[in-house]
Image (tube, rainbow, N blue to C red):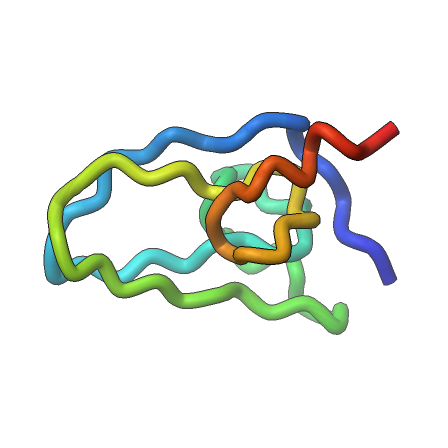
Length: 79
C-alpha cells in the first residue's frame, strides 16, 4: 500500500531539544506532518523523532523519502 501524498514539498518545522515528534507516514493526518491517528486500521505507523537540539528541520511531505522522516527530494521524482 502506498501512502497518500499530502504535498510535494517538505514541511519546515522548528523543533525543540528534548521534545518528541511523531511524523505521519500514511499521509492521511489532518495535522501534517505529524500523526493524528488517521493510520489506525492500516499497515502504517508513525515514526518517532526525538530532537536532540533546537533547530529547523524539513519533514518529508510526500511520504516517499528514503531518509524518513526527513525530506530527501523524492517529491521531485513524483508524477
